[in-house]
Image (cartoon, rainbow, N blue to C red; front, side, top):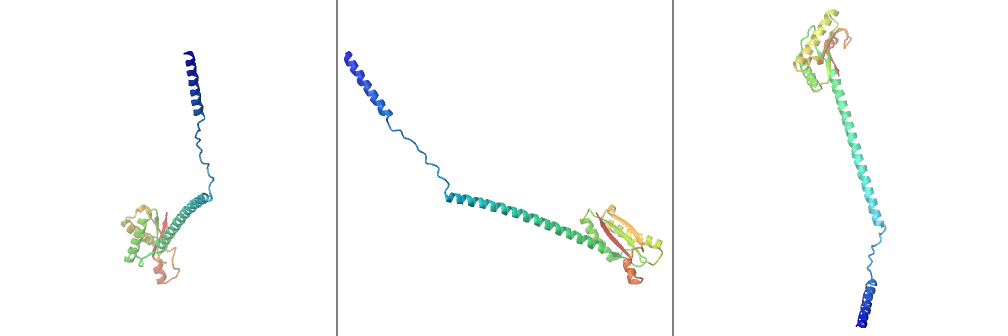
Length: 199
């Protein structure tokens, strides 16, 4: 029995070692990842195209911004020119009076309505109204008459809703003739109210 047992153990040991030998020698599967391929010409070309497209988009956006700024400057310039033209026209249009009179004619009232509309639309401007006379009469009389003429225009503009603190008056009497002549035509031009805008 001892011999049999010994033989069994040897056989068992042989089987175990054979089994271990077989399992340890089994082929192991090795996973090999594919090597990273360097970028091909095609991929490089696509990257180049994408970069060029991005640069073109950026340049296009900058051009659009530049154009918008140019248009804004142009718009501002046109608005400034329009305002300058309006101011020049406002100041160039005098109103006129009959000899020795300070009442407003229908034509003068129409011109003052236009001036009132402009002043309402441009609230940051005020106006100086200067009354003028022709050379006939004394200097003192003409100063008083010029003052009445300036006040007539001021009163009319106030009636249109223009605030009194935006309207200043002064009389120059006969001191500032538009026409230096000594005849009816020159005198008619010199009997006026003139308007100067201030901001």
